[in-house]
Image (cartoon, rainbow, N blue to C red):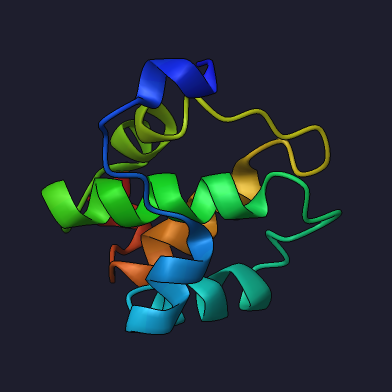
Length: 97
């Protein structure tokens, strides 16, 4: 989206979520699952994941993938990112399938 399209909207950045502590579990899970790679997509992935978990605390792996669909990652193939989000919300592999 263009910046002008966000006029009047509240914009939350990765820095804002980090300061509030909302991302601590997600950040740790990304680190443990090697979901960081180059780091270019990481802020967007973390914000998308935080929003997803805010609205759906126990998403399935399919719901996690759908929640990330607006972000593009060239490094991980999304598997590590999905694993990290599933870990952060406490989903087991069986629950998340």
